[in-house]
Length: 243
Image 1 (spheres, rainbow, N blue to C red):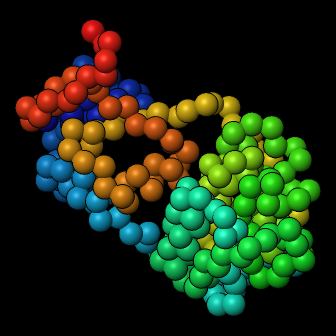
Image 2 (image 1 turned 120 degrees about the vertical axis):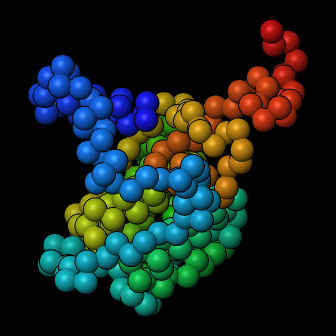
């Protein structure tokens, strides 16, 4: 009830209703209109997360846009790709399958140097693997997105940059509600922070893989883990030298 009352108070302020009218009255209406969520329902949903369908079947590509076909495209990474890049590529493939109905297998090639000549591929690599693509990248997590005649290139300063670039493509597709990008797309993003940390409510229990994948999608690369004792009584070893 305390949480409902707090939310109700905020809503009253937003809509300009006097606090004197009592936030509890709005809380009562909220309970009647909204289902009560069982404890840890959010935890179960995150643990079993699966991308819902997000495609608009009526969406069509304009002449100025490039559409990823339902079949016939590939996600291409280098055979020397590390775990970060491999994981991102497979996460992106899963998103395309579940949310967009696109079957684009991940293919590892020994070389990506001919990236400009490739067709019907989403090429993902670091600047050393994509000659001429990452010259403007200057620091870890930077990336460039560019649409070439019949492909999409994602170039990172490092593998984390390539990962965040691929997830930026994911967000663009999600907003478009179809696997469509502008043919004129050519943008460079520079990372503003060395680390983006989330204070996780799941930290006392577990960090399921789907939850970790979602954190990466939204730009987080670290989780705050307390050095103190967990509420469930399980001791956490403190780093040497901590007070």
